[in-house]
Image (cartoon, rainbow, N blue to C red; front, side, top):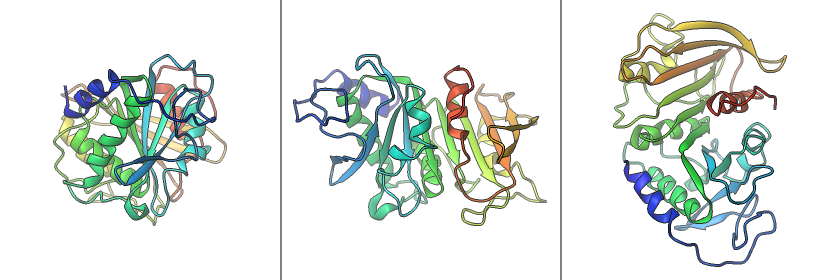
Amino acid sequence: MTRLLVILFVLFVTAAPAQQTNPESILPGNPCHGQKPCPLDGRSYHIKEPDGWDGVSPLPVMLHFHGWARTGAVPVYHGRISGATRRRGVLLVAPTGRNRTWDFRSADSQDIGFADAVLADVAERYPLDLSRLYVSGYSFGSAMAWRYVCAQGDGVAALLAVAGTLRQTTKCDQSPAEIRHVHGLSDRVMDFPMGPGGDILHPVALWRTRFGCGSAQNTGSWSITAGDLFDRYVWNNCVTDQKVVLDLHPRGHFIPKGWIGRQLDELLDLPLNYP
């Protein structure tokens, strides 16, 4: 069991102190939810409960790292992020980076420890299904999501990364069970990480090497909306039995409509829906 899971287990069985209720949350004693931030260690995070939750059933969790110059307040009202989680019974947790950015370049980034502390604090407030912990991010936040699972990925069900990576030579001590990454071939903000000789599969080379994967299976083109067409490459032939999925599209730097929701549908074995 990883250090993170031990922390969460201990805090989950410890009762949270009574606090003033935020009316946006269905839980009595929950002081923060939605646009009201949860203060923690001189910083904060935001949280969004799923629609129709009964207040008792353990919740899958998506830890999402916001883009540059944003805060955790953005993901909890973003239709392509919280719109996906709240319709699928997933608790959305969105930390805020120092100075609205993330230290994803450092292996010893303090943001890793802060994300651990955020999840531990959430476990004091909510019943969590830790077998379904997903780590996501967009742009700089996607690179931070990569950094987090590199350090604390054991026990994470999947990485859902949108338009941001680390160098493919980065050393990762841990890894999630599954990698799902989407990137635009015309991205000029977090430039598409083209490999040697124009290798378009390079954005996930780190994980393919770490997992000992064989050749990619091109499952063909697919779409969620009329505006976005994806080419999907899948590695499910890895020595470690872990899985890598890469979705490519011809456009630039953005969160494709319905992409996060589609990944959650597949991971949670739900009917495919939009949004």
